[in-house]
Image (cartoon, rainbow, N blue to C red):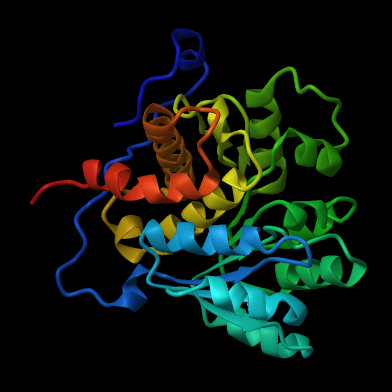
Length: 298
């Protein structure tokens, strides 16, 4: 189970998510564990897409397709072994078709804020009927276009830090009541909101919320959020995780579990490497131990 939050936090949190993982079905194939479409990267930001893709794979995704701008494709291809990178086609319909063939889309890590990029993000949000995890510049693209989010029928998970949340909503910084802010946004826009920071809040449209008690300041480095985004997409894409949990929609709980695992990996890195020296790539390397310890026997 998740480490407990503080007593003060527990008064406000409905319940902690179940972070136990069931054993994988013995007769499963890679398609059962999720096809993930990632739209990420730009000039100067070639690490983010690779971190997100590697994190998704380490968290159990069956197949990861990584779409990046053509000018950085050679760099990304050289960095990827298990993920399958491809240069984004100029034809929007080809991008849409590729994404529609997947179970979950992750949009935003290192994507940049060029006008044509933001237009692509908004178009995919409008046209895709699969779950989308929206991170970083994917969230920034929504600023001033929140109606696009409101019109989505399929699940959307947003993973902003406080700065991105402020740009999206216009709220003042620092956010005084993070729990209420996350709950209100999730309810008003029918999405799952993961408000990152110390005590990351995961809020669902029905008012359910979790305050994370794992993690440490060593994770406050560029790239940590990319790892979390990839992990979240991976958990959402695995069919057996959606089926074998208790009755009802457990999507928000899976998002909260990703946050917990992310923090546990960070705590393991802090113990082994120290908070100053640990890197986002170390979080990915720590995931096997974290996930193995939380996988049910039998």
